[in-house]
Length: 368
Ligand SMILES: NC(=O)c1ccc[n+]([C@@H]2O[C@H](COP(=O)([O-])OP(=O)(O)OC[C@H]3O[C@@H](n4cnc5c(N)ncnc54)[C@H](OP(=O)(O)O)[C@@H]3O)[C@@H](O)[C@H]2O)c1
Image 1: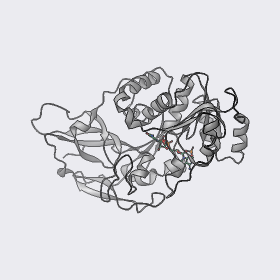
Image 2: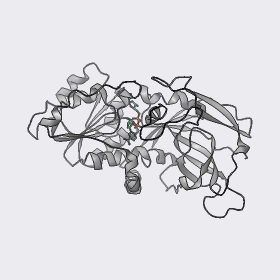
Image 3: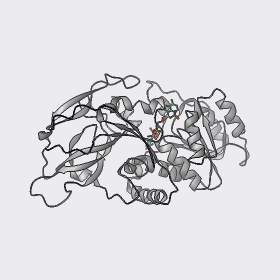
Image 4: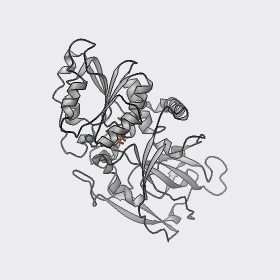
């Protein structure tokens, strides 16, 4: 596992009875800016556990591209975060207080995962938390990466939606990110030729040299489309013509539009995300979709949440691959909750490689 840590200053820790949380202040039109969130200081003593709720110290939160959609006013697959509400985030925490005399359920010291929010402490419904038993060789942050939503997205998106088969050519956009880097590796494990697309030479080198993809291309290179044409000679009606069989698309936009002209017969697009469009008010559409007809191909969108009943299956297999040294994971960890609002834009500028996480707690004791 490789971890890149950004050392940052964090707010003063000198007042033990308080904690900070980050709330939504304004809905941005395009990129998240300094006015989007504000930091509030709250009294720790307000977080008193009950029969149904436990007090949790938040240790890590996941930063995800979907968060950009959650702060839009429009309802999508989840309700929008309201102005004045703590920003929603999945994370890992430690139970620090349960109701006195309560003998069943979670205990102080249990490590849990669930909707933590952008806050240092939270009072959370016990039934919505999952206790983690971290196996030797694995780490808590793995449950926000390969053993969490990014991992499940890669696993079900590629195997269930993309229906990848050995010997096929897999094309992956956003390939050096949390989901994409796992998709590339699962593709190799399944015996595919993998072509990866990412936004820098450094990322391409990592994909080829560390993750073992067959070819990585930088979509910011001037000759990117020329290189693509060379690697994926124009597709034709023959099933064995150049091109890709499965395109795991994380980015949408111009890159994906071009890729639709390079598919093989019977091709499948597992439409995971369109990050190139998340900060625009009017996403641009695809124009090359007519090729889907002649290629008898399909584009299928999916949401990882629909696979919730099968998460354990993916977790088991991904954990096995990690423990056998077949699946590499990389984390970009930012230190300090106060850094979350500016760090989320790393996802949209390409500043992250691997899974972007905020380390919220320093593991210190603050008494409720
Ligand atoms: N369908 C689902 O259930 C589901 C679940 C989880 C995630 N997702 C989607 O999966 C995708 C990847 O998510 P992630 O968490 O793994 O994020 P990520 O890939 O770790 O980070 C986002 C990456 O996207 C790339 N990017 C940003 N703007 C771009 C642009 N304009 N054009 C091309 N690439 C751009 C950047 O890499 P470069 O340096 O390469 O540009 C950036 O590092 C997102 O679209 C997300 O919404 C979907």
